[in-house]
Image (cartoon, rainbow, N blue to C red; front, top):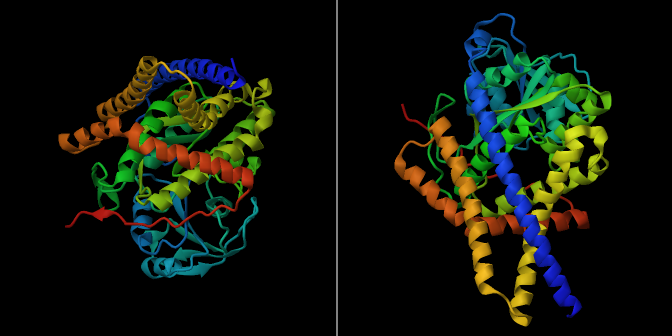
Length: 475
């Protein structure tokens, strides 16, 4: 037997074993996710949100939203953020050196004037040029921070943290539409738990094709764009299926940059968002967890299985690939930066469970898929191959992938009843069976490209997110 044959045989045994372990992990995650969702809804009304909304002693929350060249939708989005049902909050918009008229539109619409502001730079950022407040008492909760462009959301977010007045803050994107009770729902875990909660997150949905009225979701629709449709499947599977399971075991390593609430003191102590990070949301949570372990303090990071936020996703191939390559680089960057935590018992479940999972079952998966394809081609060209066995394995993997997604859709529809008609739900289910064939290969390509860019240390191109804006309901 040649060395090549031995390599192929060993790879096939390894990949088979790996696949079995991967399936078992997903089965465990599905059970944990179900238990977490059930527990959440069983205890949802122990502390009713109306108690917090009507209370005069609620915890103050700062909503931080960076903006760069968002003139098209900035006014509508700010009004949406200001419409939260919560007694004690502020909205901080950071104009991150926009080259369009984003700042001027804010000044004109909200009657802003530059004010003297006591600004303490607890986290170093690009210079802040000024703070603006409204002369109209209706917009008293709005603060606009104008700063030099920092070439990253992280730098703008840190300027917002420095400018915030409350102990908790929400980090979101200015293009996001939040449910009116978002603040109160994210605040509840901080109040309900005796163990210190350092962050909380919730499900994010895709706003493409949805209808909005007065800054709120009016009618949800399944996206009509090719990429947006598949991303809808991804979001359902990731937010409802995966993150609930990790939250259940207090192993959550990612609170989405689109919507997350944080304990400000812990974030500042951890150093804030890292300006050079390509995946600043995951990297910050990793650093916060590391800090808490080193301080030997008990902590929780909670996740809520409710749709509280809608955001526009890339509908163009070029922008989509740029985003996914950056995500892949961000994953490698975070794992490499914090590699000493991996398998280190000092960092508890994070070091022994979560980070090894991200290494072996997130980072390595695209690499193994490409290697598997190469080995399969070599096997077919030069050696005998059991086509019946190959067909059985392929069908099993395909249906396992689709079943996991179908279960996620079932749970999502059972909880949220998100889609307005059977037709849209039917289209979504059809897309489930097309995803592994049409969409998944594109993601694998983007991941491998991102890994190679990281190794080559290429300068990242963030790309321009072409906004189509929100579909507003006509009066």
